[in-house]
Length: 472
Ligand code: SAH
Ligand code: SF4
Ligand code: F3S
Image (tube, rainbow, N blue to C red; front, side, top):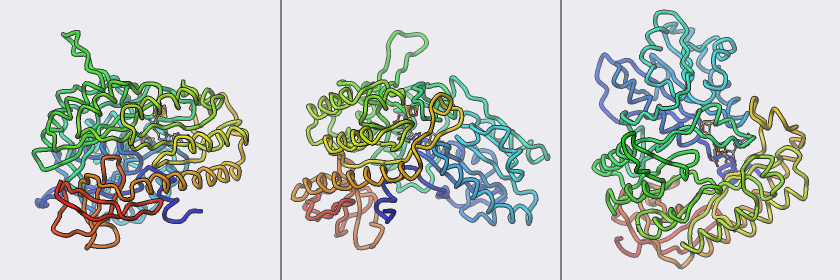
């Protein structure tokens, strides 16, 4: 099952990418090797970390042998994410043996989950900093340099890093993430995020719009607004009664420039509103794509997961969304083998997937996370082989769905934003259409950052192929 394509479906999270700032290295600066794991929000946080450290005498490097500090920004969402980080830390032992002054820091969600325990478990780690503690990094580094092991895992109710302008790490120079809120108040029973990222808080809309404008001025053509639950974005200025909702924010960002696309992630089925759909219809540059995690197609399991919606509610939301934008791109997240899930309940997930026909899905086996409500109150009683077999069935169903949806695009012409060369050939370019589908086409005279119209000529379950018909 685990060939290249299925692997791509299984984990939406990125693994151990080392990203560097694209600039000339000035002599005398210390070198930071920053490796990131996890979701887009974690990668966006790494850009905040880099920004803070660049102001404090560091530059970035992708050579870990020459680093003065190695920081890894970690994810705790599933056990395998944590295992990967632990295995990675072992690679740093010989480096530290050679260069005792090398600092090793663990950042992000796993740092938050394990806190002080990290220093006891992993003797090599000098610094532990949770997602709300990055402003404190220069101080933590100073303590570590003086031989003390340094920890800050304080979770804030206010921190949004609104005033810190992230340095863009290794991006394609075309599309960038903007974090609009932090934390999560939802308490889905399986999920560790509320514990690793704390309470939900929204960021000042002015700072978001300024960041979008600045990106556009630097040549970016697409921004993705990030939050664990973007539909509950809410901003109320201290001295005014005016409330900015997510739909209002979306419009304001879309108004920055009609040539800059706006995407967002993640939407929660309980909160998505018609106002968001109206904004999508009103602005051509708000992309017709929604990631709407279902998790399970069975209402009893959804209740145990504390998702606060039923199968029927979810299907009704899909109908509402499609009533505004019939050809919308839709993706989802699914968990197989949650506590007490029966075979029939698993079939409900597959039948829901076949009913909606998602373009794409990220699919996981349930991984119990210590300290979560599910770990405390429910039994992780579906055997691993059963979880994996159910996952395989879910993947098969989704592959068929992706193929059905991709075939519907063959013969159609769509506007594509070029992101760069395709993985396989420098003669081919790749870019996404409005619905977030990747299309590969011969390069002609086109280049990264251009909009072109592409007619889709062919497809697999994973990609669309096409030819440029004219400039967009
Ligand atoms: N805030 C987003 C998702 C955050 S985590 C939302 O609410 O949809 C991304 C995905 O990881 C989740 O949608 C879920 O499908 C998966 N996930 C989270 N915790 C998990 C766990 N304990 N085991 C397996 N998958 C999990
Ligand atoms: Fe986790 Fe649920 Fe919050 Fe998503 S909405 S981050 S799944 S608690
Ligand atoms: Fe992982 Fe934290 Fe994101 S647990 S998925 S890096 S919010």
